[in-house]
Length: 259
Ligand code: GLP
Image (cartoon, rainbow, N blue to C red):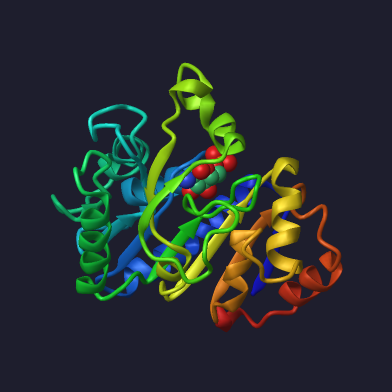
């Protein structure tokens, strides 16, 4: 894992956008997109580079991490709508190049299998953006998710429903169930970008990065991946024991290495 501590949330967004831009400019790419507040700055940055810097997504495909069960795609809170409104509608993905899970599928298991097949058929994800929940979840893999899990239905914890209540009228309106890529699925992406900003994420980041690999902190599964960039602001890094080492290492990194 490479832990990169940046002064502000804007720096996190810019650095994440740099990595995505580099991938997209390399040729046809498969992007893994996350929802939540965390990647919004990155999406804004990419939209800006599309509008003024000629960055094109016309050759790219995208896969969403997760979706609420029981919310039609047209609902504003569905991740399908959120990713369209916050990012994809403002750039130039080809029609049908942005894929999501169908939260209304009658057979969630078949839907999960279809989605895994679609990712495989696209050649796998080149670069995956990830946020982290306050309980250490990634995607919607709540604590005790199998570290080898595949796309499947999960039940949200009360804490996650509370955390996500701000997007709904109340916590009671947050669906109980979700479809999410599994930790095993996510770990097959070739490059993982884990982003976190703010003090509220500091504990989860410390557990994910410096704690043991354990299902109680699903994001700790990323320690098993060969190419993970953890981009955090000072506040999200505040509980890391080895902050100085990470900062020193990044400061002396040869420029040619990239992320
Ligand atoms: C949701 C999403 C995750 C996201 C997490 C954190 O549960 N399924 O992908 O990382 O929330 O959200 P936020 O970025 O808003 O803090």
